[in-house]
Image (cartoon, rainbow, N blue to C red; front, side, top):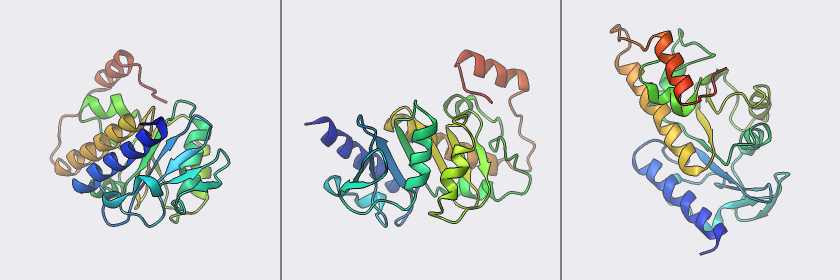
Length: 215
């Protein structure tokens, strides 16, 4: 199997796993993988994560032009902005996962660091998650908002919309966005109950031990 064929199959497999476990639904969410030539494989517009076809994934050149496959997701500017600002990004995943979206609607969430320090794992895999204001789906302003972060965040939350995570490869991006959703669920379950958070020193130790980007 060629590398391109392997990437196509991996995208379909990961997407189906996310869909089957209810982490995105209907035709929501999109995923991409950066290619060696600077282009990307992207899930098509209007497609369901549960029914992606490897042969119909959208292949884009480095400028975002469609080379083959179906018409790409309207969120291409969002993916492109991550690749242009984070040289380490090999894949980007965007979901409409329920608990993450719900947490983004809470009025007391810190927009610079939206996840409470409940466990070390979200810190290790995500760093600080930036909450961006509501932007219309498909609006190029999403890409501009990502560029405005100058590559300093691997994960953002689009308010009232869904999380977006960039990782070194597809597996890393999927694992990280699953951790984001799990932590958001914990935050909602424990909301108002006064849970014991990791202390500032605890967080600093995790950041140092696991060499986490923390700005």
